Image 1: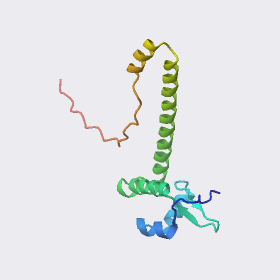
Image 2: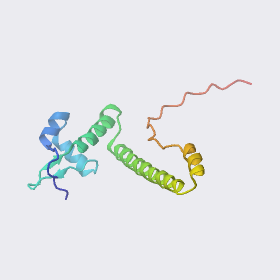
Image 3: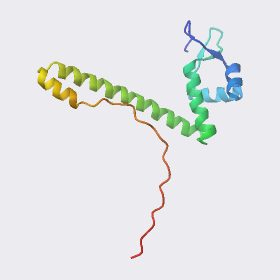
Image 4: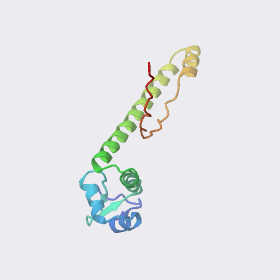
Length: 138
């Protein structure tokens, strides 16, 4: 069980529930479903970090504003985590390639380095329904 780290701000369940206008049972449900993982104090009190609150805001945005159910929220959060992992792996690969270029001849290194494109995080947008195509009469 994760314990509170010294010096890091954390909020109790009652404060979080009041701030976000949700019932504490909803927060407990999110924890049971694996959507939130608050740390615990020595007395086993749930403690929400700023990172937990960011995740909660995303969950609330998906459920309240976009109408996504909890199963959908879980899928989206898992996809976001995997995307971040893939971005990290890609950045590590790029750094490896750059190191390899550095070990090559300076002329080749400069040419290849100039051609190398840095990977930037993609912008995730929600899919929009396709406009119906008008069929042409022949």
